[in-house]
Image 1 (tube, rainbow, N blue to C red):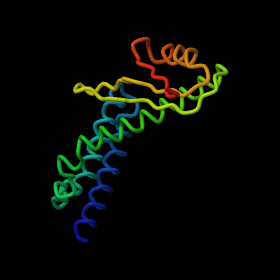
Image 2: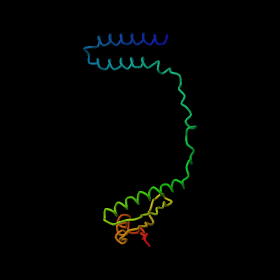
Image 3: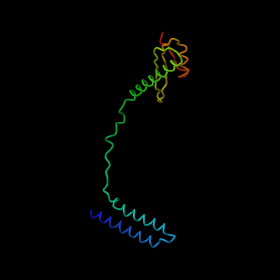
Image 4: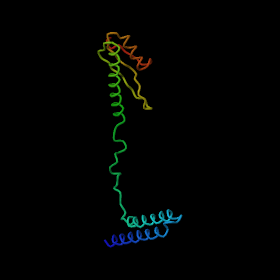
Length: 152
């Protein structure tokens, strides 16, 4: 508490000094520079007690860190393939329906290469007009995609 009282007294004295010096230099060319220097002194006086704060210790965050391999890469890749296949099947079903092709079942075989690339190796389509459906699928996924007739 005594330190706080000393801080208030020091701030008051510095403010009084600033007022006196500003009155003495009010008409000179150096008034702005003197004011800047005095304001910096005032800020340093105000911040002085803050530099004497006790050291703060940060908590140990390492105990909250997840282990490096908390999931299986194989499980991750399997789930990624499943989700990609579902999305591709839904998009193909929508595209074929928009083209006027009646579709029964669509299944896509999705694989992940070692470099992490996702590719569609085969699509099985059950449709009334298989040739038109196969052409539409190849148009969407590329001509190298194998399209299999699910009706046979």
